[in-house]
Image 1 (tube, rainbow, N blue to C red):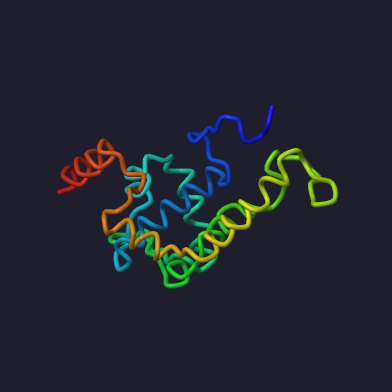
Image 2: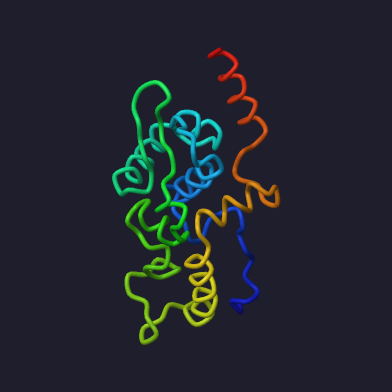
Length: 171
């Protein structure tokens, strides 16, 4: 079977871990309202991700200087300029310490031009283009696209309904 004829599985992420996905989504969401502090539970509810897990991710970004955190009434997390200017690849790497391009696409422990996996030759030109994309697109770029309505951040209708209902109960 030729590698070009293999079926694609678009529902399964190829490059990013769940931690990296959550971090990218949360930072883009925070970038939509950069002056506002947002509670972890509200961000988690809007993105439909586990709150305790997201809290650990956001804490890491606060400790690394990408987010500002504040306790108490009106507190939460707010995005900093460092995060707005950060390329997607950098954010992904900070999220869990793993570069999305480190290692073999098939997960082999050793893969290089000299000892390649079966897909290496096909993947390398694609990897290079994707790496350039992820190094040139910043969190601010993604937020601008999300704000313009041209793209959709992972905010399903039922998540928005839940957040609105929670906010209504607080009043």
